[in-house]
Each structure stands twice: as structure tokens, then as C-alpha cells.
Length: 274
Image (cartoon, rainbow, N blue to C red; front, side, top):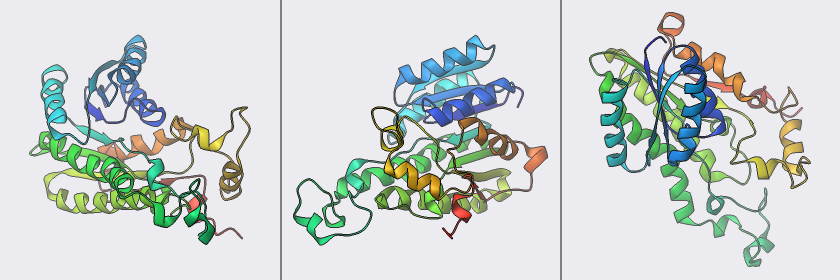
């Protein structure tokens, strides 16, 4: 990783900030990209204080121009991108149903969102935030890899293997990221660009904390169901992503590996429930 330039989107979040710090500790120069510059700068400050090299950039991964502007700055300040981590993503309440199973009474209940009430703009936003953001970011930064080789790491989800109740848009969007990972791997195979993905299971992040714990910090009913379906009976720790991330980022260790999606989920995707 020494002097490799790593570009990470969504790097102000819990998982991708952990990944950014790990790359920096191995000697990489890390471009920390996030919609909120202050979130990116906080991660950069931690890296720099720890002796690493990093720069913060504010980007909207759904606006190609802002990423092209960031790429120009990164090329001047850090160098050409060697490793791209597409970490930007997330869900939206308007793409989420209230109940796990359809109940006809929900259709007429203004307090609940049934399948028929799902907002097309919310669903569209979720697909854009996950798939289109990955697509556009790769278009911009993979240009640096042409003629040089490189590594692209996408962030899928165990939802892509086993869609969760309530979140059809997010599950479908992450499935598209997994499929796109395979397509890109084939498309760039003869260019020396390897493309893989990780599929995290349940980790506590800023986005899902309120769904997993109540105001007093007690586990919600959804948390109890999640842990019951996870053979290891716990949430993952962000640091537990790093072994797989670094393996996939190392051409000596995984040089013949491309087009795979690795679940990191405590066994969730393997468990049938009985």
C-alpha cells in the first residue's frame, strides 16, 4: 500500500472511515470523499494526527461534475487513483414499508406505509444513491487506472443475497451493485483492473442506530430478530471488515481474484433459521 492513492466515497461514515484509516496506516495516500466536508475533514484530521497522509474533498456522488473537479484536485495533490472504494450509499424512509408483511388495513391507515404507498421518488433516490453513485464514481476515477491497472472495491450488502423485510428499494439497489461488480470485473479484466465487493451484514452505523436501539440504548424488536438470524449472535465491528478489504486490495495476495462479492455477516446469509 506504500504511496498508493486510495479514493474512498462515503468516507465520513462509520464503516468507510475505518477503512480509510486502515489504508493510511499501511502507507497509502487517502482521498476522503464525503457529501459533508466537515465529516471528511474529521476523518482526515485523525489520519494526519496518526502520522498518515490524507486529504478531504466534498463531493456529491450523483453529480459527475463535482467528482471530476475532485479528481483533478486529487491528481494534483496526491496522484492518480490506484484503488477506488465505492462506499457512498444508504436507504430512505420513502422506500421503506411500515410492516414486514402486507396487511390490507395498512392501505387506509395514514400512519403506515404499505407496499402500495411506497413513493417512487424515494425508491428512485435509493437506487441512485447506491447503484448510480457507484456507476458514476467508477466512470470518473477508473480512468486513472487505464493503462496502469488498479483495484475497485464496491460496497454491496447481505441484502443483495437475502432481501430484508420492509426495505425493497435498498435490497434491490444493493443487488444491482453486486451485479455491476461482476459486470465491471469482466469488462476491465484485460486492462489489469480488478473489481470486487464486500457485502457487510449488520454493523451499527449512524444511519441505522435509531432502528437498532431505542432512546435508552435498549435493543429494539428488529435487533432481536437480526441477532436471532445471525449465527454469531452479535453485530459486526467495523474493524472486522479490514482483513477482507486489505486482501482484496493486495495484488500479491488476491491477484487472480476478480468479480466476487464477499459476505461479512456473521453467518447471516448462510442461516436458514432452523
